Amino acid sequence: MPATSRRRLSPTPRRILDILESAAPGAVRSRASDRLAMAHDASHYLLTPEAVVTPTGADQVGALLRASSAHRLSLTFRSGGTSLSGQSSTGHILVDTRRNFRELGVLDDGNKVRVQPGVTVRQANARLAVYGRKLGPDPASEAACTVGGVVANNSSGMACGTVNNTYSTLESLVLVLPSGTVLDTGASDADSKLRQLEPEIHDGLLRLRDRVRGNAESQRIINKLFVIKNTMGYGLNAFLDFDSPADILAHLAVGSEGTLAFIAEATSAPSR
Image 1: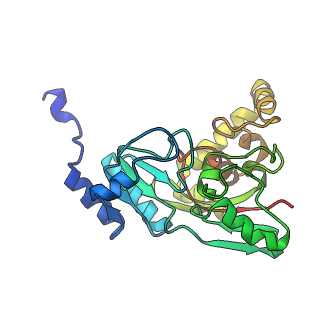
Image 2 (image 1 turned 135 degrees about the vertical axis):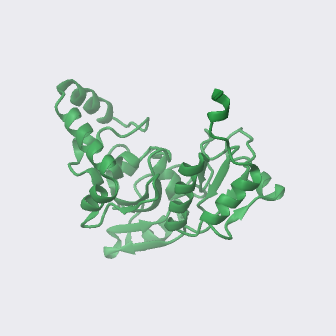
């Protein structure tokens, strides 16, 4: 049989829309006006998506990720779209997480805040101001940038340094993994759930943790890179700072730009 005949054929545009609609009923838009409206973000790139999907919650995001894996569809998550680097633009499937992920809860008299990715930094700070607190990260685009992008891009701003940045003030995340598994890393059974539902990820994180900790040179390099303000690449310092795979995964997700999981909710400790 010729090699070309063994290739997995990409779904047709009509089939793609059917797949997306099955995963997120009523949430798929494919009109030219809908797609062109999302063809650019704050960067200079112009990429028109094949379709725009506005999931209603983490469960629909999980279904979209399962469909993406099964049918080799490329998904790009977008919330505020304020990045100058084009991370929220795509010529494939754009998942709009601004519209339906706007829950915000202040907990423990302002000592904690639980935020979904569609909430802007300014909206969160307006609620926290009553308690004399604010989010640690202080990006200049706080009026428009959202918490989802702040966490996923490890956005920081000029004043937060290494103490009040996203990584340091994070307590837990609700993650939707590529398989569709929804994991609340703040739950008491988070680690056992990760081990049960995603054994390869759980065991892999343990192996990487032990490999890093067992190599003095790796530890030296990581400590050197992260003792200063560093928002580049994965937060490998998570392998030194945390023991459990669930906590490691949560902090690896900070700055991962959507490559490890979708961040459906973040709980953090605001600063004064």
